[in-house]
Image (cartoon, rainbow, N blue to C red; front, side, top):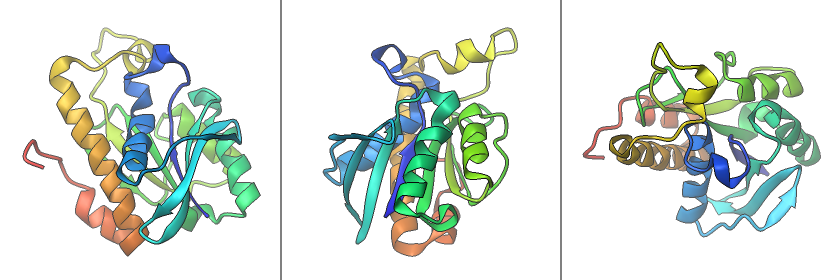
Length: 193
């Protein structure tokens, strides 16, 4: 079983916030393949299906961002997944322009509390993650207020393209491998794409 996880916070009040772009990406992937989040397990909303010939479980942890690792690690243990090869995580990144995508096979949390908690619960940093840019925090603004804030109207089309690109990148990974996904998607997403 391949686990594909979007990071975010549960509840209507967090819908369409910068921190929930991981949920948007996994929902985009689900919509592209007719997968519905009908299951509730591992403290997450889950949907099962097949993408690019691979059995997948799409997950939206409901533990709040800072405890995401508890949910994901439970699924990893249950399915006996090798995180290095069978786990893909979508999350937000304040160090990337809105909608820009960066895929990595390993690395630190980079200040992201959801990734930090996941690394803690997995015991290593070796899992695929697709960071979706949400733009830089204004200097005068608190980080929590920024990531829990919503996108401006002008940013919405960029973030929608970024979530769509992240979903397509996961498809390339499932079909052709991580290197192919990184080669194709680790660049700026333009309005024409």
